[in-house]
Length: 109
Image (cartoon, rainbow, N blue to C red; front, side, top):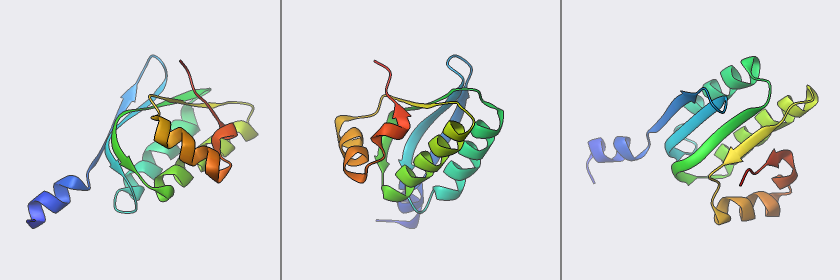
């Protein structure tokens, strides 16, 4: 594996979405991309009413990434708002459930 390939694998692309208001994640959300995820979530939480994070194009997320999402959800809940996770795979939902964090989120159909 070359350095270029390794770096490319650790990328996380964040795109703002207008409808619904939120962000779309593409790539990997892990310890290497945590700063990018945290900045995006801070900006989202700071401006959003209810917010949506689209996970459909996320290829990997570790517990560090899930914890960042949980923190954002807790912050929004403290202001009477919610964080929706759209496109969350069955595996992501299962891990959130095992961690006791699933109830922090809404999961739209």
